[in-house]
Image (cartoon, rainbow, N blue to C red):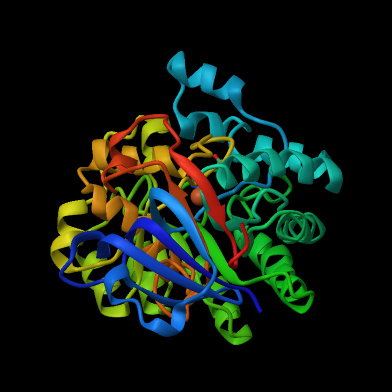
Amino acid sequence: MTQTLLTHCSAATMAPGDTPYGWIADAAIALDSGRIAWVGPRADLPAEYDWPAEDLGGRMVTPALIDCHSHVVHGGNRAREFEMRQQGASYQEIAKAGGGIVSTVRATREAGEEALLASALTRVDAMIAEGVTTLEVKSGYGLTIEDELKMLRVATRLGELRDIRIHRSYLAAHAVPPDYKDRADAYIDEVCLPGLEAAHRAGLVDTVDGFCEGIAFSPDQIARVFDKARALGLPVRLHAEQMSDLGGAALAASYGALSADHLEYLSAEGIAAMKAAGTVAVILPGAFYTLNDPQKPPIEALRAAGVPMAVATDCNPGSSPLASPLLAMNMAATLFGMTPEEALTGVTRHAAQALGLADCGMIAPGLRADLAVWDAEHPAEFAYRIGFNPLHRRIFGGRA
Ligand code: DI6
Ligand code: FE
């Protein structure tokens, strides 16, 4: 039983309510056996929490960060394609010419499990250094049953080797592999669905994801994947409306999806469906920025409708080689007009909601003691700064 009292700190608890950021200027936070036992103004601390105190030297505490959308497990990189795009080729053209996702599929299939793990760890360590304690990781670059399982095993091992919680999404419906060119339906039947059953049986899946797009899978094909997820009792989420409006967000919402992600081309109907279903909008400014997308996601309409917005890195070798949730927050604010409070909520409370996790994302009694301690004075500093990391230290499950 470890009981600690954090004092001499401010706290952005991110608890909903009338106070922006759930702000407490002079806070005390009591931690008991890896959980938060009490949080509030130090002056209100009940006498029973007279526990060994740790003086945080006036620093700020927030919930630890959550990156709720990443593809950190992948082989190789696509710097060469970036070069081609800078010379005028489009992302879709490169994909059609056998590059794009498919080139990462080749590199991921060729990589051994240890090599995949080692390269993913470099990105995970970058996130840990920014205060991340929960990270979602997708498959989707294997596209054979065995290679998808391999990716999910590597994702699982990330959480065994580091103090971080890994949330795994099965994303075999990410791209049609070359061996199934023009036979997307056969790929769904022969690889995606049986692979999902196998991965679920092996205990490797927390959520099922898909890519609903002209260059990937149609709404009908995604629906078949979601039907299987439903039969297995797994929650779903979807890459939707990134490059065009196929009605993916509304489809996802009709399955009670935890989130719909990207959403640059989201329609008013899509927003209404997400609101009704409680589906979180995951905003991914890194992909928008990298692809030079001409269209922004409808932030104002999402805000007006009261759809919760999360912010994530989409860390992947093609469209978002971004391993910094802090920079994602800055981009969400600067490029999309999200407020600094929305950006911080997007990597804490709403990110937890996008993963279906009720035990993190805020500083509140009963939740996990996953905290970040920062050399910062005001919580708007995170979205304000560009390429600056004020993390002092991270507390994971109550442990420093
Ligand atoms: N949308 C994306 O932005 C990434 N995947 C997806 O479905 C791109 C992945 C890649 O280009 O490798
Ligand atoms: Fe993605």
